[in-house]
Length: 178
Image (cartoon, rainbow, N blue to C red; front, side, top):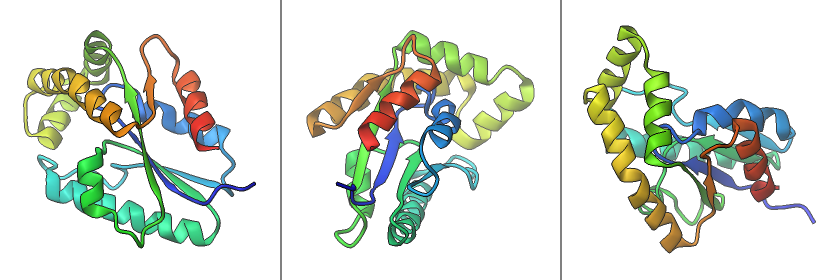
C-alpha cells in the first residue's frame, strides 16, 4: 500500500546533523517519490527570527502541496518544533510529521566548532544568528534537551546522532518515511 504524500521536517538544534544527512537522503530516496530540501536554502536574513521562520515554513508547506499533486512527499531538513509548526500548518495542508535529530552537548559543541573554523564563517554565523559564536553554540547545547523533551511529549520520532555517520542517520530517517 502506497503512503499518502507528506511533509516531513527533519528538526533539531544546529549541530545535530540535519545538513549532513541531506545529500544521503537524496541518494537513498527515489526522486520521483521524495523531494529532499534544506530549510535555509534561500538564505537566512540577519538575525533570522520567528517571522522569517514562519514564512519559510509556509513556503515549504506550499511546495509540499505542489509535490503531493505529483504523488511526492517533501522532506525539509531544518529546525522546526510542534507548537510553531501548528501555528503555520492548516487542515488544508498535506499531513506533516516532525522528526528530531538529537545529540549530546559535547557532540553539538564539537560539530559547531568544526563548522565555523574561519573568521569569515564566524562572521556569517554571527550575522545569521545575531549572537557571537560562543553564545550561538551554548544556546544550541542548552536548548537540545528541552527540544528533546518537547518531542517526547508529542510522541514524535527521535533519532540519536552521537557516534553515527550521516549515512547511518539518513538510513534511520528513510526507515521512518518509507
